[in-house]
Image (cartoon, rainbow, N blue to C red):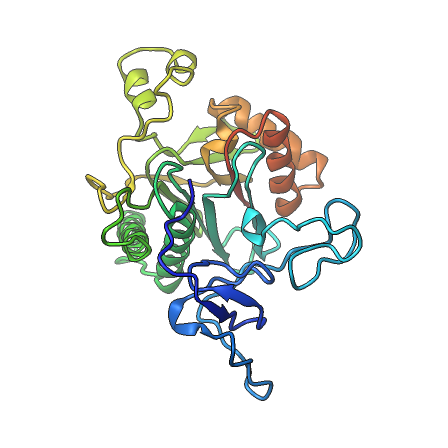
Length: 353
């Protein structure tokens, strides 16, 4: 669905100086997020003696042309074959530490990427990782902008806090749960901030986050994006329960295969947004006692492999084929989902413990 526009005044991107419209949310030349207060009139060129600043990290610029491998110019078109480059928002990756990474992709069938992720990690493997995924609701306006803002706001709250309770494991767990709840509040506020007050269909998205800190893993969700723990030798664990019509059917005894293939399988019962009934995440805490993978993902992946056990096996096999590298593994899992049809946006974030 097209984003609602109210003005198309020409302005300048504060990052690269490219021409943008006040209605644009991202610069097509460099992928930077655009905020109204940062835009300058196009008639006034950027001062070459002044270094432009951006308050939040921009998405990485587009890579080589996917058609011929040529250089993509500042206008967003390949300088060799003329093909328009994919927008940076359509596919991006993050790797804050060698053991933590994520990939977010538009998929094949959708015209834009409404998924978003924001991750952080300490350098020491297995010490501290923060994984956040938000999946924009396609039928709502500006969900691609709101989901990215929500994911980043939640990540920032989780990064800022490191409460340890009173030293016991239960108090540590309680402190992390409180921080995760605050992160969901921040994500909700960010979604609301990116929703027009008079929008006929306000932006909305799902929310899921996993916090790994020194052997304690806490996950919480609102909606149907999921978190999993896949230990190397023990049983795979689904850390979240969907807030969805399908999950309610499963709770009544209907098989997962039947519930998740029905006409209302992806109708969610909770979300973040102006019209959300409640955005307090449902949380689960587990003690990590062996090597394995933490995964947080959108339904663009689990649509094609919903059960925890086979999905865990898919992750293990994919990781083995990619030398155990989290970024290569996440990318390969996105490719796998696209090979199954890519009917939705796809986000995969991984932490190797």
